[in-house]
Image (cartoon, rainbow, N blue to C red):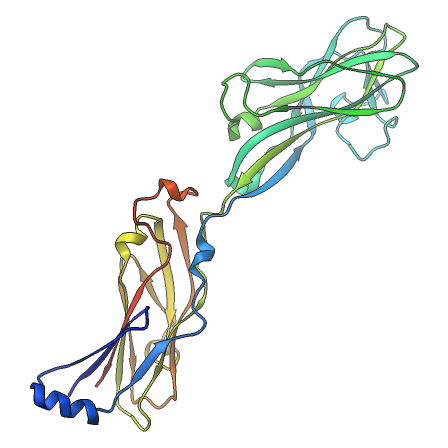
Length: 339
């Protein structure tokens, strides 16, 4: 006689018997040698897959001269203007560019180091240009942040300070002023930033000691490793030494397809015939739908079906873009046959 025991991830059991009349079936229920099993306590935490936006920032500093190099002087004299304003850890008077010798507005622009943004996962919220400056004496000076994007120069509001104490000012751009839209990766990596400034005369210069840009962004992981855990604990009847056939079905593939581009789970069952092979797991996915394990002459007190690894990728980081009725939680159906 073949005895089948079926269980859903809800823990509901259904027993089926082949080729039995009603009377015989009732007698068999009392006498059957049954293998039992239940949901394991340590289930995978599927809710951890739900996208969760995290916020971060990245600093971009000058690495080369930009399209404008108008400041009249620099200190020290050797080198280039950009390296005088690239080190924010330096003391204010160690390096700077200056308007000394000019009565006019002057602008320096600098090329910046590449934006990394979590390896491509970032969605840019805004950029902020920072500049630190002071007067060379007891007088007023005026400065403003400057950027160049898509071939056009844009400047922030005028900032006027008095005296030799260095001040850090900033200008935030939530959108690209050329396009009127959110900043793109390409636009950030071609951005130039700097300062436009005017001293109080040729002998009363403004000094600028550093310039940098902060890119504020959010990122959401939409791919990664599946959560690990145990699915089922299978307990053979005491003294049962026959063979077992275990099938694990994925039952809600239609709902999973609305959230996932793919999900591949490495399913293991120690002490099964499949556990002695290389690899010692089977792949359960939306495409395969089922994995099968064989136990020959079952002698272990318990067999555990577990997820030992795997990977997934969601359709996007916005569940509202997924199809109606989506799910990130796989549902399983377990069938055990005593043979």
